[in-house]
Image 1 (tube, one colour):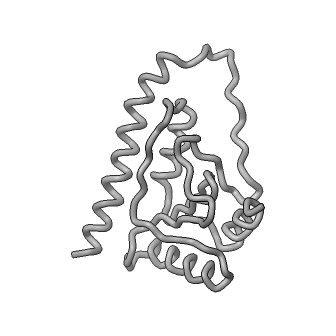
Image 2 (image 1 turned 90 degrees about the horizontal axis):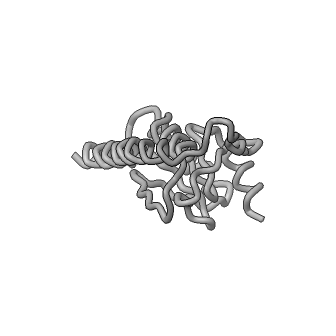
Length: 150
């Protein structure tokens, strides 16, 4: 029963992100610059982690792994293994079954699209210092963590 509740929480969180994205997509389309104005390129790290919109930043003292807790699926087992390997390597992390997003400003269409791609992608999702990646391997997670731990 607890598993169903946790999966339900994740589904509700993803649904909120999708609805929020669709709502703001219309508003952003009306106020977006002309097509001739180029959007700045998104800088993806060498480990494949992409920046999230500024309103959505995670904790800076650890990384967060988003996946349903106590989930027997392949995705749940990958998340469990990531947590185990990171703890063995002395990297502080936490695992969460859901995420909340609050905005201090209105996000652009590009930012919302990036957030939706991450939140609707394959689990587990790993957040490190305002950057995220879906289903990363341990080498990418450790590399990203060490490169941003300055």
